Length: 185
Image (cartoon, rainbow, N blue to C red; front, side):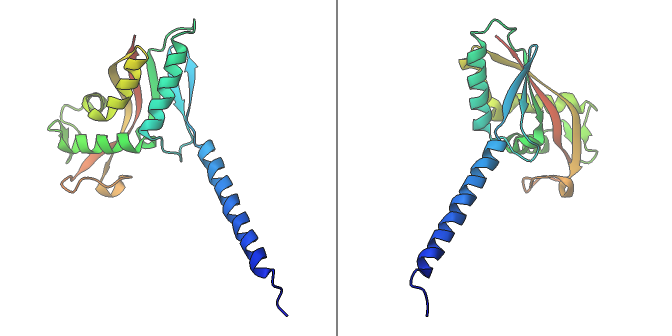
């Protein structure tokens, strides 16, 4: 004879699984929360490599830290080390599109036409509107974005890139680099 409470037990078990899954998702999100550390005049963003950092999250993190830092006696930050472009999908997309459209990037050779990949990638990022939200946060905290500095630019062909490119883009494009934002009060 069937127990009339089986459907109830099944529902309770299902709710337990769903709530347990929600708790696991919340724990995963907490593990992916970026943080900032200060070393002298450099702010450094930290997050596990597998965790992309949305623009809004970076903006909020910087705004909170810089507004607190303004009232502290320690040296004022002069740069922000973001780390790898790959951790910022919005920045990666902007870099790929800017390089694909730039007359200064040689997609056949996979290099800046003048051979200065780091300088060109820094210029493409600085001139791109993608950093406007960051600029706004910096200005609200009394800072100005004065330059972007990059090193270790990685270049790849369409098949090697971690993101899809705009349909018209061909060749080898920069897809990763170590990035610093140079700031001043």
